[in-house]
Image (cartoon, rainbow, N blue to C red; front, side):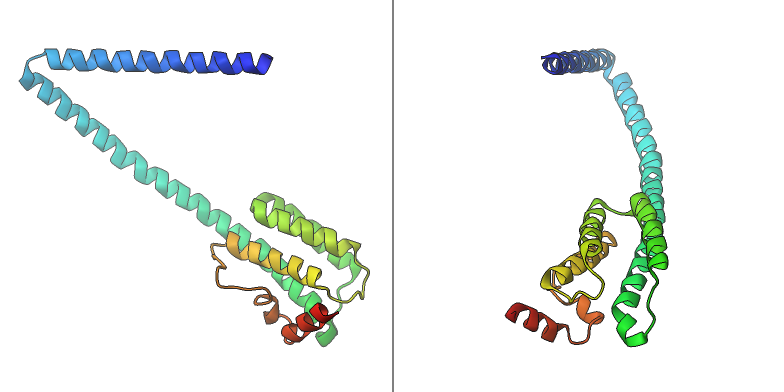
Length: 194
């Protein structure tokens, strides 16, 4: 009841403000057009010049500031996402390289990455990372890959690519992870068969 009353009061207030603005503009136009046509033409020309000058100054500055912010975010995101991709690569390649990350190093990385992700990640990447982290923290070490685990990891990587500006429209399941796993098609076929 109280929320409905607040909404109605807000709408009424906005209506009054719009009515006041409309009446004020109508009065200004009536005053300008009531004056000698040469004077009103000069006033209108001057007003248009002021508005045009203001817009040519403020719009480029606004766009420049927006681009500056987006560039800063892009740099921070790319640093954060690069660290995660490097970690995933180390984990997936550990059986071939013999370079196994300790649990302590993994926890340290994940907490640092989570901190950076909260600051710089998009909503889509945060949700994909949450699904990834939830799934892989419930797995036991040495569990075999499943289609679900592949999809979760690839969804995270696709979300990161999307946040960095790629559209991913021509990528199908397995395209990204096949860059990490040489025989991914065989693995997927075996998983689908079982």
